[in-house]
Image (cartoon, rainbow, N blue to C red; front, side, top):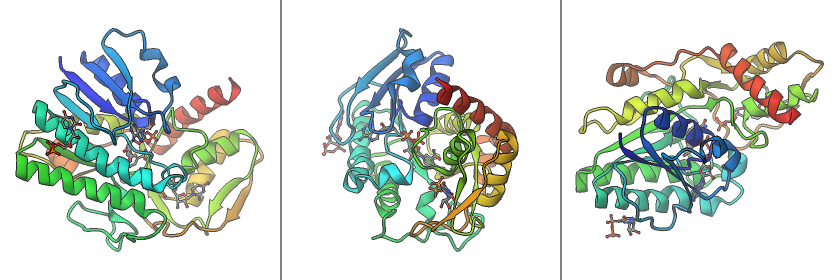
Length: 312
Ligand code: NAD
Ligand code: UDP
Ligand code: UDP
């Protein structure tokens, strides 16, 4: 049993991670400023004596005593991270410095929730960890992409310079219950639109691809990465290699939800990556991990969640 800090613990992924760490018998300190996260996501944990919630912004120093740190604090959807882009970069960069400084002081192992966005709009397909990426440094997505790239730099420099035990996970598109209904991500948008009988908004021609990982699989990957030997820092792609076009996703959601929604085409946002699929060989070799939940099964769970939430 360990004392574990989860930053961004009231968010979509963070709240599932808190659940799993508590189930495994750990003490969890959840730190969040509730920018995109919600108390609703962790309400069921508030009475658990092994769970502690702290409202705090990771761009400011944090002095606590913990054995491990999962650094997830950062808005993840384009609508949210572009709402206050300067704060997004601060969260990634100052947040990483503070959490690395904390890890250094208390000699904690620390995991960074990085992203497939470090590959930008990739020319290499599928993406392997040794691909350096194609990122626009001055576009609307840059606050997130470059912030996360700089955070990776900091993690590897603290590893080399201060011998810190770090783990860097490059997370690909993940979906599931507790996604924010209004955060504009494609899975939540399509499901909410279909449940409300509205048309599904396809940006561009819908031929761009993404590879969607169900949240339970993803969290399993993060837990395994944290437990790898001390000298293994990654980075490791964690995601589901099954690739779909947005048109295929829309058709699947329509089939599963039913109803009368149609497709409505809208302009493609600037710098929107054309394709994305993880090569997960490193995760398979080093973590003995691979996703198990199919898109159809995961969507069923997510649809059930949104059905209940929208009805409430
Ligand atoms: P989310 O927006 O639901 O969660 C992020 C959490 O961080 C929220 O609870 C938010 O309130 C909190 N937060 C934001 N800024 C903060 C700050 N300055 N101080 C303290 N807390 C702060 O997003 P998510 O999907 O759960 O993403 C979690 C992490 O995983 C993020 O770092 C994200 O970049 C990464 N990630 C997610 C995906 C995905 O598909 N969901 C893909 C790649 C990477
Ligand atoms: N820090 C923190 N908690 C700690 C230790 C450090 O938040 O327990 C922050 C502090 O703001 C510091 C940053 O982490 O500036 C980086 O710490 P480090 O020791 O690497 O460098 P410093 O700036 O202290 O020389
Ligand atoms: N997208 C879409 N309709 C929507 C929301 C998103 O067609 O209502 C597209 C978006 O342009 C992108 C893909 O779906 O090509 C995934 O978008 P999301 O914001 O979920 O994730 P990211 O672009 O960060 O991978």
